[in-house]
Length: 157
Image (tube, rainbow, N blue to C red):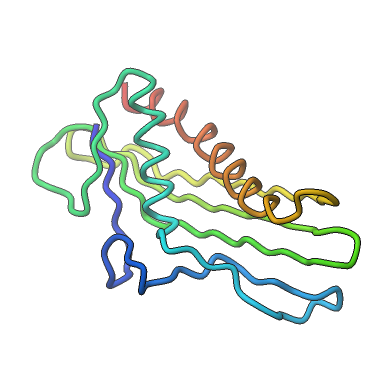
């Protein structure tokens, strides 16, 4: 099974000089005071998580950037949106992570389904506040992939 990780961004992969905006840090009045950034593209993170889950389910999954002419089974990632926000206060940190994953499932050279999966998680931390946004991002990725994989397996078998 081939996972096609196409998007409209010009840069490929990750580079220390390239940063991907995941969300904002806002004060308690809702005014943006900073940005949450990553050196790894959200598209690459979700494509890799999808590959790992499909491999764990017994499929030979690979990631590529372009659709080739074979007529096998494909998952084409058409849109990935991540919004990770945090609001620190004196006593706690509130964080919210929303992920939207859109994909097309191909089988025998034709699209069999357009699918959309989303996850929205929120949490509050009083201790270990610096770990909350990363943990929430990871849980949202897992929740999104857990929604998508059974659908993919069912439709492409």
